[in-house]
Image 1: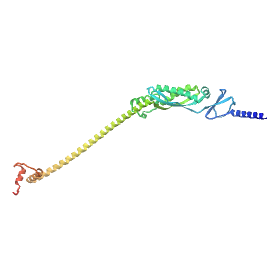
Image 2: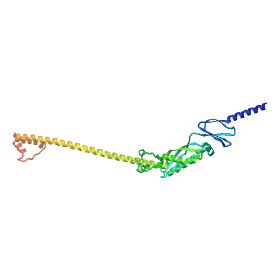
Image 3: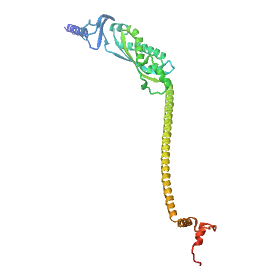
Image 4: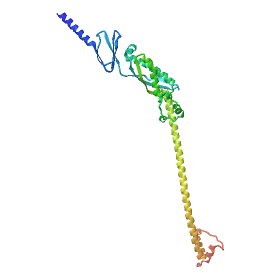
Amino acid sequence: MKTSAIFFVVGLFFILFAAYDSFFIVKETQVAIVTQFGRPVGSSILKPGLNFKLPYVQKVNYFEKRYIQWDGDPNEIPTSDKTFIWVDASARWVIRDPLLFMQRLGSEARANLVLNNLINGALRDLVTKNKLIEILLSSDWKEEYLQTTEKARLQESRNIKVGRDQFSNLIVENTKEEMAKNGIEVTSVLVKRLNYTEKVLERVYERMISERKRIAAELRSEGEGLKSEIIGRMNKDLNEIQSEAMKKAEIIKGKADAKAIAINGAAFQQDPEFYRFWVTLRSYKTILGANTSLVIGLDSDLYRYLNSAKTPVP
């Protein structure tokens, strides 16, 4: 009685486990493939929902239906103009043929490993065949976006044939055929980051510093020229103002002198003798001082008026 009960419980357990293992659910973001002893059974299950399989002998393999992100490691690659740069790229890929993907790769980890080798190889090949400017600028660049004043760099940028956007498209094209053999489609490749190596960075910084110094020297030179121009205009205006003021002063002085001469002439005409006498007295104030010794001739007007003066004898 006990033995039959044990067999009943064990049999019930196996029946329940078989029923549980017979059903599986496919999510909306998944694709399922049923295999029996490692071989696929039927076609890929693309529609989400509840499905049935044979218990114990069949296995369900799930694969992602959405886009999958691949991130590569930064690589040090020389460009065709001998500039070493760090290139960090990423890509998006999707499983187009789940059955072929399972047979050739089997897992996302192995797919990423294959993508890593393939994309890095295509990336290195394209970088070494193109100049740095082709990777930095897009094909629809505009000249006003450039910050450099170097004529050679500006002329070189006008001759962009590929550009950063087309560069990414070329990598996709180079990997498309090979990845299609594995049931994968690479939809996009993006160069996330470009940077110079340490040695190149030092030269770039030195070049930037010398460029900024040159620009500063040009600005200072322009400022000195503008300063000289302003000072020149100021001196010119000052000279014109002073010249005009001196001209007006001379005119006023000339009119005053003419008026004084006219007054003196009128006074002389009224009484010439008195005028001579008055002028002589004015000259005494100018000539004679406290410690002045004066030697004059007998025919001098100064002596004549002094001699004619009635002075008491002490």
